[in-house]
Length: 289
Image 1 (cartoon, rainbow, N blue to C red):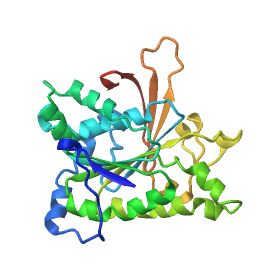
Image 2: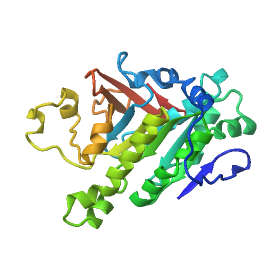
Image 3: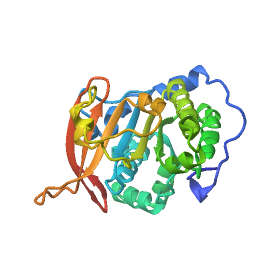
Image 4: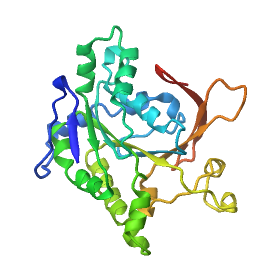
């Protein structure tokens, strides 16, 4: 695996060594900006359903419905300076699909910075850390090694993974007929994520691709809120991951011929069942609600 801090000169910083305890000063620095989650993107959540530190938000939907683009949108909001209506916070992005497009991120920054300059863009990118993983085993090792990273960078408040379902079919094939073996690495990854999110007061945003079709009687099954059935939702990742999620946002393409917005989200708070649905479009300058 590879961890890069995208700052001046594109220098890469490797994270190594064992995790160490977080000092009181580092904890206070980390907690200082916790209210930022409400300002990250108000349109993503119902008014009473904003995530707080320790929450896990899943972006769920078919390929091509804007999940990764929405992550770009949140990355830009996070790393922009406060004078540009950003949060001026740091985040870690784990790319398992190898879909991350640095040129797209820079383009979005250029549209948001006024005026934009190479120096300003580099200052923003200095708050952005990128990891690439090509297997669930590599993802697990990466997560185990991140404790030292979060200890030494108190400004890191946000963790993003695109996507949690990238290795589903590979792990399923490697596990043979044994479901426990198929899900072993993902369960361990989930345990590591839960520890990181709780211990370091992070918010986690992760994408999951909709690859399973809903069964004919799933809409009638008990315990599901209406929006889940409407979004053709069928969980297929391990139960520990499903239990970790506090917010689920369904992504879909708009089917209305007269609509100027090509996509929509249905945002669900899984604890209080608050639901909000909003259309959005993807332009060269980014997401527009």
